[in-house]
Length: 103
Image (cartoon, rainbow, N blue to C red; front, side, top):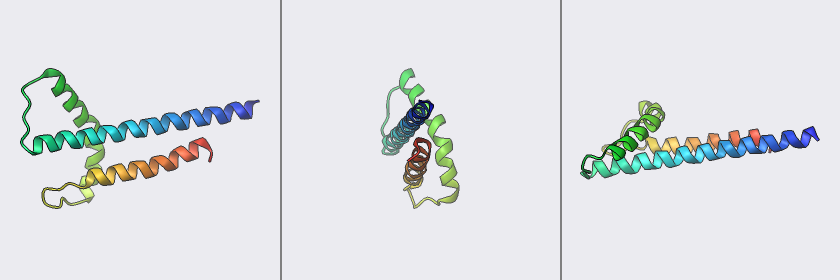
């Protein structure tokens, strides 16, 4: 019985890890979209809630993307570090989830 319970716990931990990876990927995409909006000259009147969301995205996503920005030079106005970051997150995350789940 304990083997079945341990397997079930591993699957649940793997599911939780997979969900965290998906949430972080969504945060990266939201950060990219917000940067594109402001990059194309979009302006939003001051709104405390909107500023808080943008600040949160900056604090959560920028440190991860800065790792890749150190190694990948910008291609003019195009920053491909989010693409590399998402790909690496999905690949490494998928491997970790499979290891935790046990298959």
